[in-house]
Image (cartoon, rainbow, N blue to C red):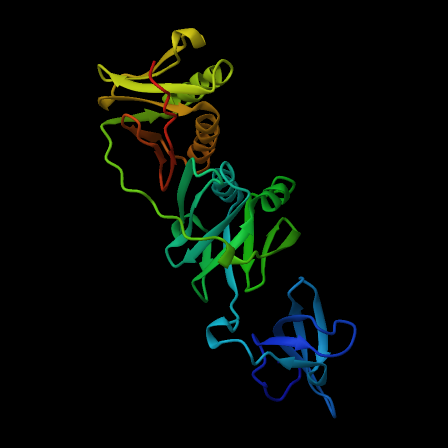
Length: 316
């Protein structure tokens, strides 16, 4: 290991710089890089602000006041995936939030989150089988800035995306261009509970019918803030009130059950856009819509789904 005859067990330790240019700052030891007679082992340290510095042991001390459960365990999780799948994954979540927590396990990357107004919810499991390479040293939870990552991905050739995650950073690389992103404090993002729902209406939409649903919502968005959805005579129908343009669009003729409910059209339109992207990226052939009177609507595609609270209007 870089010429050292032995390791001193400092890798992964939380340390505090006690003198020098970065005095008072804290970070994690990335590796032991050498040994200086009289000064001790030399370490590369990743500071909490993202900078990497090198100091001999007399310039830093191990943080001993932290409880054991807070000690940093070093890991390097590495992945390779088709970039369009990662963009679809992040874009779908980004329809509701700018930042999110992601649980990374041997089964895949899982996101469950609600928007700040608690109107919309998404659950998305990006399964391990969707990755070309999936190497995990430790199952983890991370929090990321979705917009920063998407802005980077949309400026590079992302056909094959390499990802490396350590306790401090997420690094993405494609076609010789890489960028590191500082991880956010995961403790600031509470777990999202998924409500149990019982639906009375259900429709499975093909790609063509999903596109028709999307176009109907675009029309509705130009004339009203709320849109109604119902199933009658096995038809899924999107419509508005007569005093709001009297839109009526028959989306499919193979629906099951019955029901009618209203939803905020802006949220529903954003969700429909992302569903189309997911269908293309993951080559999904259909999406499923489920709802009931004054219940949240559920729109599923593959291993992801949205839920959206109803827009309940006062009765005349």
